[in-house]
Amino acid sequence: MRKINKLADLCWEGLTLQHVSNKEIVIPYLLFLTLTIIFELFLTFLFIFSFFIFNSFGYKPHFQYYLSGGILILMLIMTGSMGTVLLLPKKH
Image (cartoon, rainbow, N blue to C red; front, top):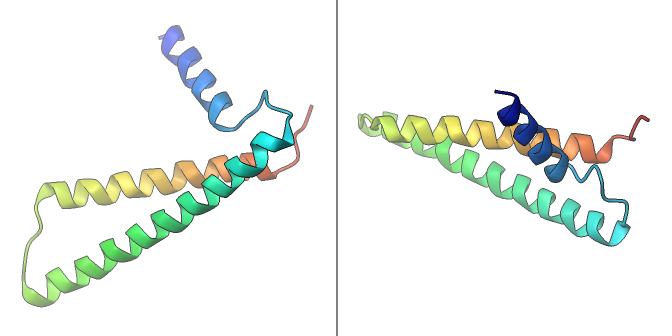
């Protein structure tokens, strides 16, 4: 279990660029995160829109549809937290 926790910590440190001080890397990464958030918000809009369309025509979506919504929510949470960690000042 300790190895999994260490792997998760290393992944989080890599995603939040904790050991990177070069500004030439941080600025494109922030641009990438911004585009990722915009794309995820677009997918969220499509998910909500399709939900209303399905309800208006009486169609019952399958389990995979709801599973994709849950995965989309997790992606939004993860991207938002990564952006928050990158934009907040670092405490030493």
